[in-house]
Length: 383
Image 1 (cartoon, rainbow, N blue to C red):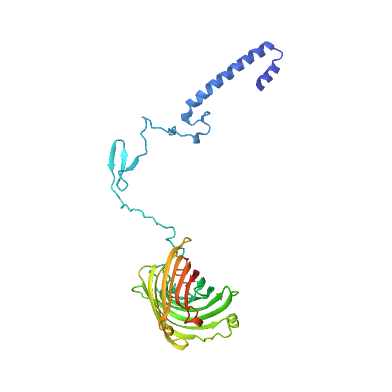
Image 2 (cartoon, rainbow, N blue to C red; image 1 turned 30 degrees about the vertical axis):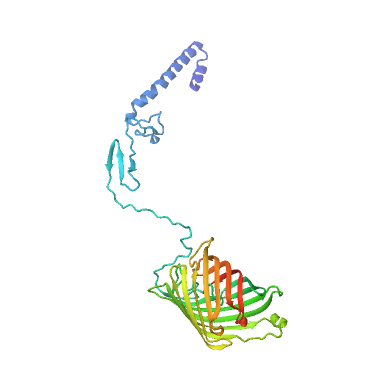
């Protein structure tokens, strides 16, 4: 149009010629707009650019529309695979023909755990070789649950027949020093040296929670399992025990005959596990030094309690034990405890809560020849 304006000015003196030129120029433009595209397409085989496709790299001569339904022109490219039964061999369906395919692998039936707590947090290699370890966490030989003089942490709120309500507390524990063995999801295996110590205190609740008496125990022991049959476990050791009356009790009972009960014993105990929860045990002790006490004592009992990780819900337990002492003509005490127990990441260490029953001679050796029947509730942490 700019060219037309210039020509119009040049021909402004001849209006008829300008009009004729404008008409002819318009006809030329129309013819070019129609003819050029057709000419370009005709010459595209010679390498000329196609003005209708300025981005030829984005198009493909093989590009076809994607259909979401089958057509008669192209058969579906996806073959369906099916199983004739859950354990059968796979077959491929092509058209109307079912072709059996040979199996390359054997079917393995999946298994599932019944409990989310079957897999412990701490993983142990049950076939690992024995090795030396300092201050091992686990125990090879577990303390007797119904053993009243075992070193542990505990508190028992009891009522003694024909006596006051008492709080029997046990402040102590047993710890590994050296072990040649290995850890396990059950109790540890091998040979282990332990040390122990505890104070067994009786508090008289109605009497202003006075300390009536206290027994002190300290000792050491060697414990081991049997490699050919770890259900068998043994311990051999030494412990000292002495008994003392409380100051408050002596002040309120000035005429009471104070006893200097004490003994130093060598012990040998053996346990057998019918299952990982069911154990029977027996132990003999001989005192090479004793005052008031006599040399011999015996323990035996049966327990059903968890020794592996239980998770937060815990499991039930039952413990029955008897402790016989020569100074009371081989009488002694009969104990039954039952309730609920928890085991954490260290196998064998057990937290228990439940009922407690004792019948026999006093569990405080300053009153060793007094008969006591105890009924109450206890909390115990065992090693």
